[in-house]
Amino acid sequence: MERIKLDILGLAEVRCTVACSLKLGSETLIFSGGHTHERGVGILFDVTTAKSLGSWCPISVTVVAAKLVAKPLNLGIIQEYAPTSDSEGLEVEKFYEEIEKAKGYLKSQDIIIVMGHFNTDVGDERVEDVVGPSGIEAVNERGSRLIEWCQINEYTITNTWYRNHSRRQWT
Image 1 (cartoon, rainbow, N blue to C red):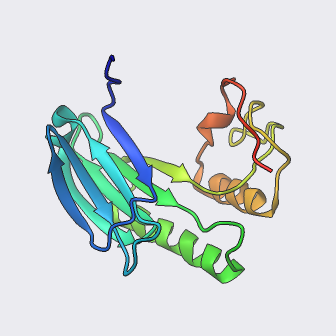
Image 2: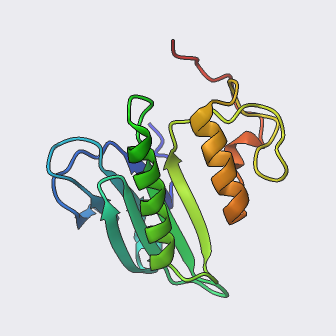
């Protein structure tokens, strides 16, 4: 079997109870855990990319930030796993505060990538430079919140801009 080549892989549901960095063969895994074996996020770096890892910070059980030293600009990566639809509104607002804290850990002149699972539906209708025509489902309340946040921060939801294979709809 051929091995897939990945430089950086964001992970959700890591389910570890500590925040730490591990060497896994030639890869490096950083992750943020909680008090129970639930949720948790991580970022897996291949051997070459791990050499550029300047520092990292576990913000919460659902948010971790990493700084990669690069030229001409450094790269900041925020891996997140948003609360599910069963969560209360206050938990969602706390989550966005944690994302902002992670952004504060990075420098404003860095290229910042926020990746993970926002547990939202943002629709398939173009919204400025934020949402493209290739999303799925109708926009929901959490999706509206994400779109608003992206507009304020000048971010793009990139997976809505390119036609992908047919996605399975869960009921």
